[in-house]
Length: 265
Image 1 (tube, rainbow, N blue to C red):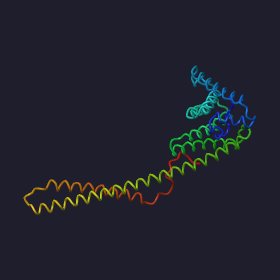
Image 2 (image 1 turned 90 degrees about the vertical axis):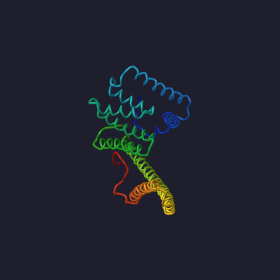
Image 3 (image 1 turned 135 degrees about the vertical axis):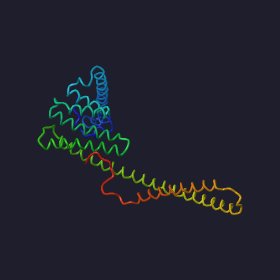
Image 4 (image 1 turned 60 degrees about the vertical axis):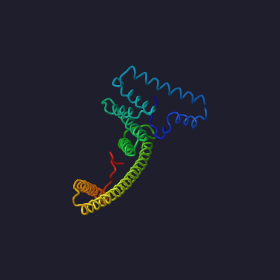
């Protein structure tokens, strides 16, 4: 199986689209070659499934595990690919070159997994993980680790791409927080209006009951009066809660970002 050192962008539109583009670039439009590539990918997926049916992953060699992670990547099973590469890195048998390749491909796996994240916060955390592994690769290369040609440039390009994605994710998180803050303000305003309307209604009923009691001293209105006074106390407690929320919203922001991150970029 071919090693997958390419940038994650190569596979952004799926393995089939990437294969077609490569065919066009290298050999021109050739339907026969395209069909062969499709058949090879289908066969590789079939072979992988049969391989897993007959053997446990714990029985694989380190090289087989690395190739398995590559297959998971092409099948867009990034969680499985990530765990498999971590298994490779944890082995005492892994060579320095295979370790370097695994770190690089972990960066790719986390990048592609981030593209499928359901929330900007999840995407941010995954992009930061991707950046971490690309930086690990650069650190090893800077200290003289041997690697395939152009891997240094590819890693730098990938890291630059991840940094752009991190900025976008942070921007999206900021927009969501702003929207949530605006919605909270709207909810507080609506609650305040409702409390004021209720208080006006309570005040009117209290005034009517007191007037009725003065006009008819023999009437016992203590229960009705007590219910209204209890309702007023409840409204005052709710109003105090609204005032506290308003103070929190108006308070100056604390220093530092509120973004939850799992690392630096």
